[in-house]
Amino acid sequence: MSDPTYTPPKIWTFDEANGGKFANINRPDSGARFEKDLPRGKHPFQVYSLATPNGVKVTVMFEELLAKGFSDAEYDAYLVNIMEGDQFGSGFVAANPNSKIPAMIDTTTNPETRVFESGSILMYLAEKFDAFLPSDAAGRTETLNWLFWQMGSAPFLGGGFGHFYAYAPESYEYPINRFAMEVKRQLDVLDKQLANNQFIAGDEYTIADMAIWPWYGALTNGTLYDAAEFLQVHEYENLVRWTDEVGAREAVKRGRLVNRSWGEDIEQCLERHDASDLDGRYK
Image (tube, rainbow, N blue to C red; front, side):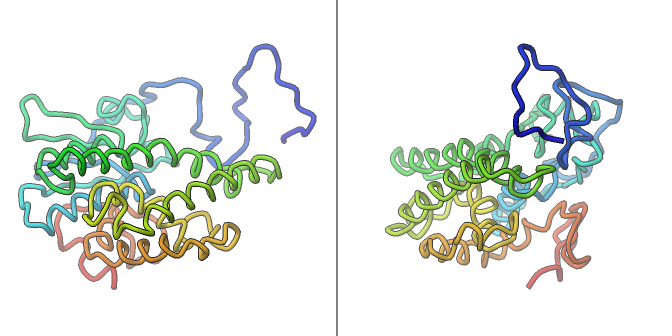
């Protein structure tokens, strides 16, 4: 249990009973904890993930590429159950030494290319297929500005606000208020950017939208941390408009269900190996 009078010791030591939703898997070291090869499918790209916001970014990108007619963007997506510690298997650690989803293997290169970190995967695919990343210097730079904004900002939303609001073993006013303030500031940044732009980086739908929507769109539509009322997200009208517009895209509806292992059965798609795996699972 936490102690409100806690004073940090001179040297920190690991306490296995540190509480919280992820206490059973969190440790202060890296590397494989057991031997397990990753499964392989028939498609050019192998994805190992879970339908958390970071995972959804990548599967939405693949579904958008396929919808755009890139048949060589076919992919197999395998579930990585992070609560069971799948990310610490030797095969996954070889794909991502940081043991975080998502990870991807591009089998079309020789040797094969591993890509990890969701932002890196989005950028890799955008450059490989010349899609969803403007070719002009100004448009490309603005898109990457927002892609990296998301990578730098989301930890305050997830590891900060989300942890203390939804996952910590006890609720404390200071950390919740601290991170709620920061998240509302981020929502205001997005709302003001979208006041004069249809999409995040301008009038073109890009990987910036795909990176930001699974986090901030899910927060806005109430599916992330059940915190929409607490944060009064309806006040950010431009963000609400964008959230609805992006969420209505067919590829987004499909991509958000890949490697989903919770919710109604019809919305769960543990693995994706064919387009038909997602048919009939969304409206």
